[in-house]
Length: 254
Image (cartoon, rainbow, N blue to C red; front, side, top):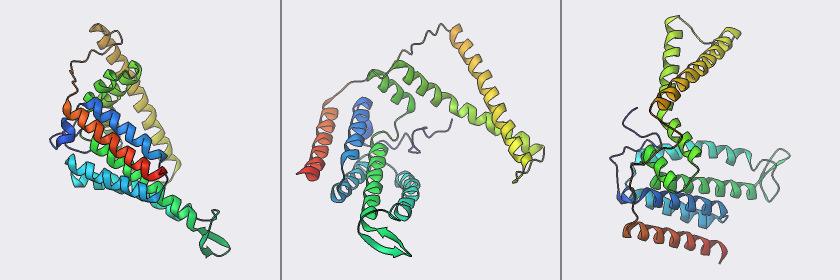
């Protein structure tokens, strides 16, 4: 695998104060903030959440290119909401497209959805971005997440690169045989065979991995060598996060 972790494109060396916090505290804060943001509805509150998320990314020293790329992909999708959601929706019409109203209320709702999504992505990028996937898995294990989910996550992180290598080899074999894709039945049949062969190779690889782990006395439990410890910085970060969430909640319901 390359030098960048599989969670984000943030390089591991880009570690700010946030990345020195206990991984468990970062995960709890990230999920608490994300679930709280889902409950907020007002445009000013969500705008303030985006500002706070941007400030958190700055404190975490997340590279601008990483934040931009993540928000770009999200907002390209959100742009479809601004186009499609207000068409024919109930509410005050902003304009008429023939006989179909373009709703101002639905447009405002689309803006709230976009701001909420941007705020959540900023928070997750700042708190979990840059965290090594193995560290994330062991932190989830310390948080008493079911062991099967943790194992599934760790195996996925470990072997997704192996599956990518397998599919690259199959695509290279197709190019060597002068395969040129097109809109025809031969292309569909070829891609179907490629997916089937990839599944067969994945099954074969999984059986070999399972046999190797049984030879090493694996019995369904990963023993973590990571020692996590909560300190004053983690308590301060948790208090600051709770204050920020409480302030946004006060803005929403005061």
